[in-house]
Every structure is written in C-alpha cells, then in structure tokens.
Length: 280
Length: 168
Image (cartoon, rainbow over all chains, first blue to last red; front, side, top):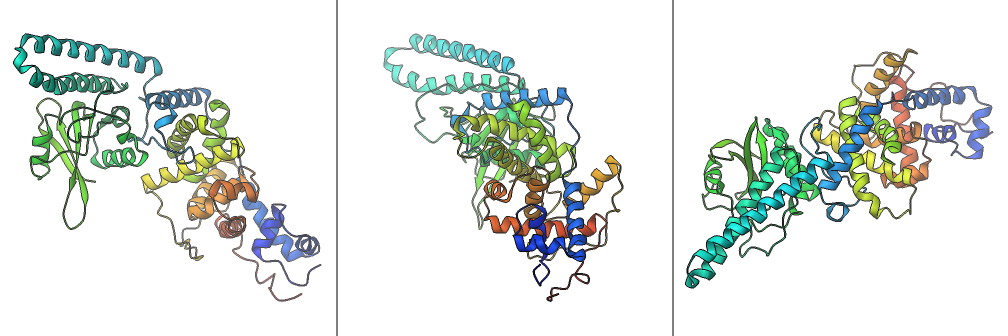
C-alpha cells in the first residue's frame, strides 16, 4: 500500500479502471479512500442512469426530418465537416421540415416556373427589334430572376425547398439568396429567434451555398431606407420567410461605423413595407 | 443507421442540455450532421466516437444558442451557490431531476467528459478524441466534475478530513 492517500484524480481513475496499481492496492486497504470512492461511484451511477427511451414515432419523425433537411441542402458537398454540426435553424421546434416528396414536387414546380419565365422572355425579346436584341438579352436576367425568386418564395412558403438554377455569374455582386436555407427560416415572429437563425445560416455557410444570378430584389431600396441606410445599399443576403403569417423577405445589410455590424430588415413580400428591423 | 444512433445521441444531448426540448433539438441537428457527414466519414475513428462528437457539439451549440446556463469559470473554483439540490431519492423522476440540475451547475467543459464517461462508457482515450483534449485533461476534468457533483447529489463535498494528504 502506498503511504500517501491518492488524490481525487487518482481515485476517480481507479473507479474508471484507469488508475495505477499502487493506487488500487492502497484503496483496497484504506477505509477513507473507499468511502471517497463510493461517493464517486454514486455520482457515476447517477449520471449514467438511463435516459428515458423516446417514442418510436418521435424517432421516426426525427429521422425523416434529418433526411429531408440534409437532402434539401444539397447533400454533403456543401456542408462543413461532420464534427462541426451545421444547418442550424431558427424555430424552437422544427416540425415543418419538408418531407422529401414535397421537396421534390416543389423543385419540379420551380423548374416549371423557371422554364415558363425563360419562354416568356424569349417571346418578348423576339418581339423587339433586332437592334435592341442585346439590351433585351441583358434584361433577361432580372426577368428570369423574378421567376426563380417567385418559385423560391412559393417553395419556402410551402415549407419545401428548391435548388437554384445554374446560370452565369452576375456582372455585379449579387446578394446571396440562400434558397436551400430559406425554408429553415420558416414562419418567424420573434426578431431574436430570426437573428439566431440568420447567424446560424451564416455560420454553417448555407447562405453562401446558392449560386445565384438574381438581380437586387425590388425591396432593397425601401428595406435599406427602413434600416436607416443609404437606399442604394446592396444587401448581403436576401431570404424569403413568413413573418407572423404573411409572406415576407429578410434582407441583411452591412452597417459601417466605428464597429462593423449588420442590420436585418424584414419587409412585406408584396408591398415592401418594413415590418421590423434589428441589428444582428 | 439513424434510428439505431438516435437513442445514444438523445441521451448525450439530454444530459448535456438538461431538458427534453433542447435535447430533441440538439439530437435533430445531430442526425442532420450525421447524414451530411457520413459520406466523408473515413473510419479512422469508431462510428460511435464520431457520433458522440457530433452530439456533443450539437448540444454545446444548443446551449450557446439558448443561453440558458452561462458557463461558470474554469479556474477551478466551482460556484454552486446556496441552492443545493435535494439529496437523491431512489425514484426515477426525482433522480433525473436531481442529476439534471446538478449537471447543469457544472461548467460544460467538465460536464461533457463526465457524461461521456459515466453515461456512454467511453474510456479516457476515446473521450479525449471526442473532445479533442489531451487524455490527462480528460482525467482531471472527470475527477473535478465528479468531486463537484458529490455535494450536489447529497454527499459530503470532501473527505479531506478523513483522507489527509499527509503520509499515513
């Protein structure tokens, strides 16, 4: 038996089967150390007590939501390392994660709308004189963007997801439009919760996943004004959401000053009226 | 695979977050991270270790987001205040409440290794891998975490009067 009592760290290691032989031998013949070891064992048993099992239905729902959410975000390619959980969303409960079937249907609907938009643009441009063909072509971008944006908004409102169509990069930096992450914003009513969702979106990188050729959204100017910024400010991020039951958009602007910050503005999707704005 | 992992993921999240609602959220995020990360899981660690790491990170993320329990300092001085949880009975609900309340009083840096050891049964090396800590730090934190939990669960804080550190 060692002459000195093992300290708590050594005793704890003995309990875990990771202590030294000398310490184990000491404890075997030392009543005070055995008493201390019994206290640690009591703690260990309490911490290790079984957590109540979850209902099968709850597990099934959680698994379905995980598969849907992971699939909607475009698979593993755009996500961070597995040990750094990503894809945070805003709501306390997230019962509305899109089922895979609905997501597929929404994606198909979005594609149909986009094709229809492109078709109409082609019809319009062909109707114009050849002399204006180049300018008409450049106007194609916002028109297609409008169709894509409508599809994204519709998909977001239905709780489903769409994958943004591919396309050439904009001639000027466009706001990030995280179509994959937008459904995660869901129905919001609390600026604090929405701020957390936006920060999470930025943190997990989902806001930057979507390549976009969208032109600045129509609500940029009133939103910037509502945030007390120069109306010509460009948003860093635009995402559709439902604010207290009505279709809306959230735009995030960089605010320069003594300290750099960001300001989020939620506007009505139709009227662009500012519903709420807050600093992130 | 996800179904088989859910129980262990939820258990870790439950112990670390201290309530069912936060644990469900953290477990949900864990499952999503597992689905996304599986294609890149290289098998260098055990699947369970990898899953635990995800669950711990999701729980920490949840705790940060909720900001329900600001962590106490890690300078070794546990400030448990006067609110001592009642000594544990033997019935399930009372025990769970007690252990949850007690665990939440531990800084999460101590809580996580204790939970991984006593709930999940990981050895020190595995816990070190999950938490990205040296094994010696794991050993120390488990010990200090347990020592802090003893009085919270109704035991005496220390037996130093019985176990003087002087040679016997």
